[in-house]
Image 1 (cartoon, rainbow, N blue to C red):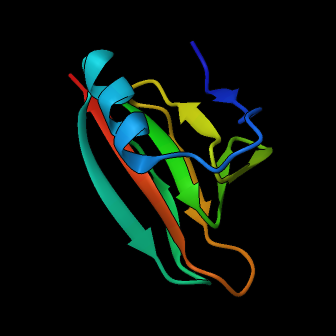
Image 2 (image 1 turned 30 degrees about the vertical axis):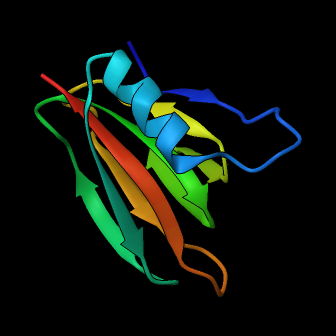
Amino acid sequence: MSIQIERWSETTLPDPQDLKKRLESEGYSVFQWSDAPGTKYGPHAHAEDQSHWIISGALELRVGHEVYTLRAGDRDFLPANTIHSAFVPGKGAVTYLIGAKH
């Protein structure tokens, strides 16, 4: 299994509480995180499945040679042990939910 991206198709911005409830209903432990513009995370992997769901701002995820830019409402499904890196582009911070599932 590889990374999957789900794009936000609603006309309104995502409601963080609704997103959190959905992640929890899918079996994820959830917490909110924010990063300043320019923040970089080098290549790493997690022992558990993760899903990042963007509340505001943008986050670039790199998996292999592919770069995925996630914006408000977009989410990823990142299987355990997938090597990836992340970067916060632009001049604004990013706020997102991180769901972890063992």
